[in-house]
Length: 169
Image 1: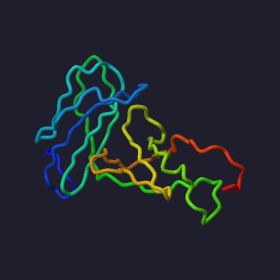
Image 2: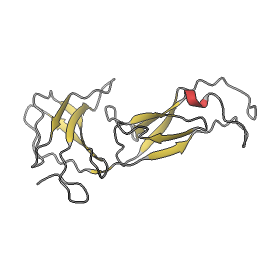
Image 3: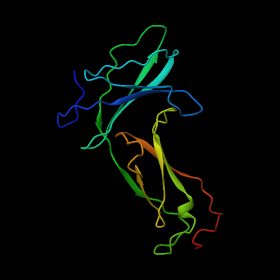
Image 4: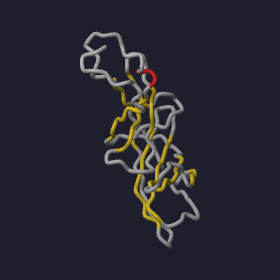
């Protein structure tokens, strides 16, 4: 079948593979999907991978992923369901601040990192910087990788603010 967006319009996603167990996140291969939905990623060494797909379009981004086990033989028939990407917004509050206090000056030095929950090494997520009031938005830029619906941990990194007594401002 032909890959289409939720409105039935044809899309041609880009696909790639990431090792599931890795100390670094880097794609091992990318491929373009043809109009029939087929793609080929040759010469993949055996292991467990996350196969991801991304289609950017005028009606929004579509993303999907699937776990793939590669052995000595070709892997066929893998289906990656594409769904509209989502936006995540929030606010980081440092607990030592009293309500209504001036925002902590260290907030802009922090960043929010998104990881899948449970954490799947090799699955691309992303990060976003904080604005002066502690709010964040992901994706934070039009060219940032889209976020697929799912469960995520929101981590604040690094925590550079010096420790203070509770209630101190």
